Image (tube, rainbow, N blue to C red; front, side):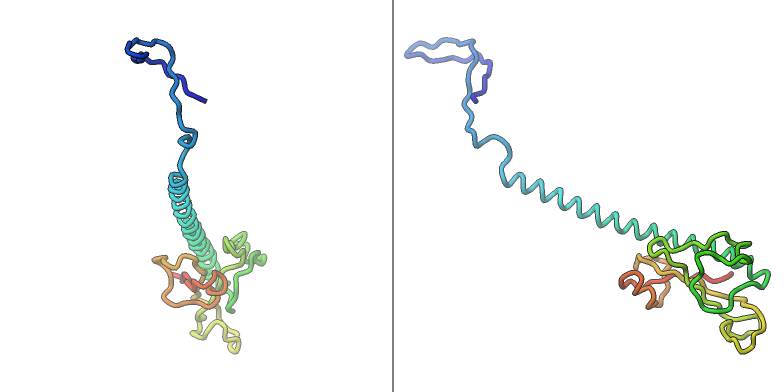
Length: 186
């Protein structure tokens, strides 16, 4: 449909020029309305690039947040184990920590935190007992564990606090990173 424009333009009628104060119609070509295909492709490409950057950034943020949670969980477990160690109550076998502690352990921690991604427990490795024997040495049957390691797997392979060794359990759990974080008593 032609567009109406108010204008004070001269209109030539034959040899006489007059001023027309009536609305002037401007004919527009119908194919000039809207955006060209190239303009649309450029905008869609820019939106796609921004969306890809946002998705990648969001995923990395989630990994770092879960790793941070794992580290704070290990700190909470360490505090409970330090209380248990003070009373000679440390476990003497390699294990994955149970999600619900047995009644004597509930004095130290009400519930054992679990991994935020896999919902499994964290790894507990006793080292030596008070007689100097390995804690998992059942031959002596004497003494209690005095040192231990708590280990969790990390998703972020660039974490500055990751262990230098790669754990196979972590490679299976998190799709190939193999990175872990270990905490030991003071």
